[in-house]
Structure formats: structure tokens, C-alpha cells
Amino acid sequence: MDWLFRILKLEYKHVWILISGFLGTIAPGFLILYHFKPELFEKYDVFKLAILSLSLTLPLLIINSLVTGMLFYKLPHETNDENDKNVDATKGALLLNAFVIYTSLLFCYFSSSSFKHLLKLFLWWEIGLFILAIIVLIALRKDGGNK
Image 1 (cartoon, rainbow, N blue to C red):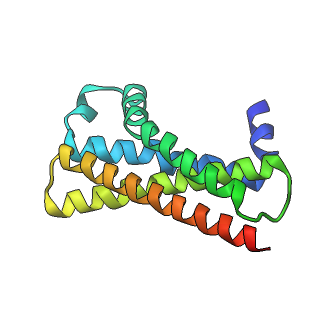
Image 2: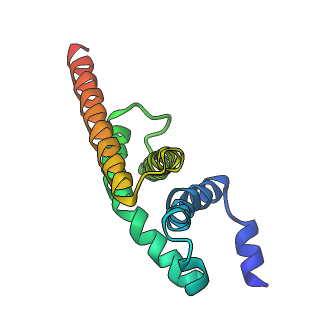
């Protein structure tokens, strides 16, 4: 019964992190597995499938965390609290991860592409987002230098 009181004490930030964590890591991994290897769902239990889905999505999350981390520490923020910036950067990385995976998977679904093509789409998305983040950082640096 103690776990129920802990759940009720959660703030909205923690609930948002949990939801975006599921939607940004475990759920897309399950969709990737189901799209390319649906027979694995009959063969393995949920824990093994969760570990496998995390192993598919966490490498992208690391790259997206670098991108959002760079941007969230340079962009203006409502508060100067370090914890709030970390929570927002984590939410941004998880949502960016979900966006990259879901759009790539949707494209592969409609074009009946292979897993190798999905990995290429991931690579192109991540390269594009990293270049976009560098451009934003350069623009912020030039804007900050003029003040």
C-alpha cells in the first residue's frame, strides 16, 4: 500500500517524465520489433522484449540527449533552477527520440522498407537534427554577442 501513496505524491513533472519515457523508449522499440519480427512476441516474455526494445532505442536517446542538452543550456529558461533545466532537457530528448523513431517507422511501414532502411533513416534524422542544433547554437551565440 506504500507504493500507492508514493504514486499519489508524484508531481506533474515526474508523471510527464514517466509517460514520455515510455513513449520515447519502450513503446517505439516494441513497434520496431512488432513490425520487423512479430514472431518474437510469441517466443519471448515481456521482460526480454522490453530489454530488446530498450537496446534498439537507447542509442538514439543518447544522441538526442546531447542535442537537447546543448540547446536547453543555451536557450533562455523561465527559472534558473538546474533541476528544472535537466527535467526539460530529458523531456525534450525523449520526445525528440519518439519523433525520430515514429516518423521513420511510419515511413518504413508505408513503403514496406527493410530494417536496414530504418537504420539509414535514423542516421539521416540524427545528422539533420545535429546540424540544425549547431545552426541554432551559432545563431544564439551571434545574438548573444550583439547584446
